[in-house]
Length: 189
Image 1: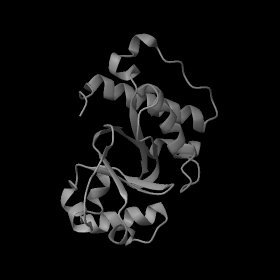
Image 2: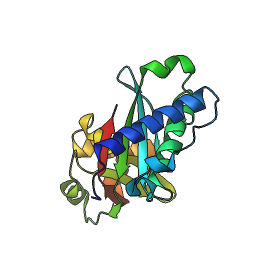
Image 3: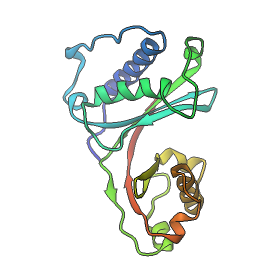
């Protein structure tokens, strides 16, 4: 895992995400980033997921698995996308903003998980630690490590991940898939 963010960097990113969501939902321009607020870690390439909840229920979650832009830009982009572009939900409206809670997950680079059998795959997973991405041709799906809280059994976790990918839940049992794992540094409002 890369060096952890400081508490100040975490607060900054949460505030940045909140400002970006509020501006986008209210159709206002994004506030300028003060370059003096940006630490070395914040301007380095970083991958993040931004998860929105409303009254404890998922309201949006969008992110990137690999870094392709500075972490500050990644968080801002995915905060807006989680609010307005998660195809599973209608866009967040201004009246909802006070009830929206923001969680940011900063990802480590993904690593291929080599395994032989379905049982071997289960044995190599680290529940509550690993985020998992399954690939089947052009299709892919990922669950952040936080999903283990709702799906603590590895076989059910993988079943639901296959369903999310648009496949039958037992695909991982019947065909060897490309599997990648990653870890996250998670923080929330």
